[in-house]
Image (cartoon, rainbow, N blue to C red; front, side, top):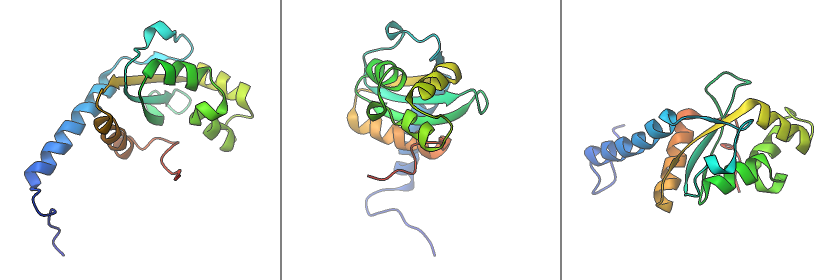
Length: 148
C-alpha cells in the first residue's frame, strides 16, 4: 500500500517541518548542561522553552524526562528540584518505579545524578511540537507513556 500525504501537503512540506524541528533537537543537544547539584535560579532564564533532564546514573546522555514550560527557571529549579510531588512528575515517576523511596530521596537522587539542557521557544505551538519531536527521537525513560 502506497502512503500519500494529506491533500495539500507535499513531501517537501513534511521535510521542511522535520528540518525545523531538527533545529530544536540540535539546539537542545548542543546546549551546555547544568547539573542539579550546582544549579542556581540565576543560571536559568525566565523564558518559555523545552528541556531535557538527563541522569548520569544511566550514562552521560541518558534522557530521563522531556518537558515544556512557560518559565524554565520556575519549572526546572522550583518544581523539578525543590518542589513537591504534584509540581514535578519526574519525582513521582522515580518513586512509582521504585528507583527512589520517597520525596526526600527523589530530591537527593535528582540533585546527585541529574542535569538539564534546554532551549528557549516563545511560541506555545512550537514548544508543543518540539517537545513531541524530542520525545519521539530521544525516547526518555519517563513521561512518554502517561495518558490523561
